[in-house]
Picture 1 (cartoon, one colour):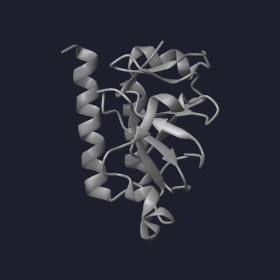
Picture 2 (cartoon, helix red, strand yellow):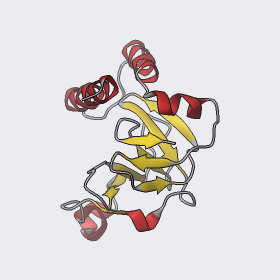
Picture 3 (cartoon, helix red, strand yellow):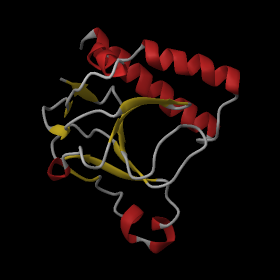
Picture 4 (cartoon, rainbow, N blue to C red):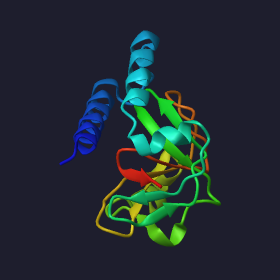
Length: 155
């Protein structure tokens, strides 16, 4: 496993621990500022050019194209995420995450969930969010797609 892959696994674990601790509520500002800096500093090198507006395509670690272009990197309390506009996502290469169909189909949840959970049509199991509603802990835009830079590659 490469150093970058190790950092990625550690960051995903760290983000999961924060979600458990804070329940996806806003994190106190001074702590959040420290975490935001950590997220930017640990971005994989292939995404650092995206911060400067470089046009780049997004692939899963298994090599499946999932985005034709990055809009930006959004940094929130629970991590840095690659934003892909709906016209630049490669829909034929993504699907609903198995077991998450209720987010679409169950009326009890479909109107309440903040995002739909998708993944790529390969064995990468990367988590792709389709944002449905605004949240208080990040500047995610409803109607856009988000994926952790630790679960994909920029080329």
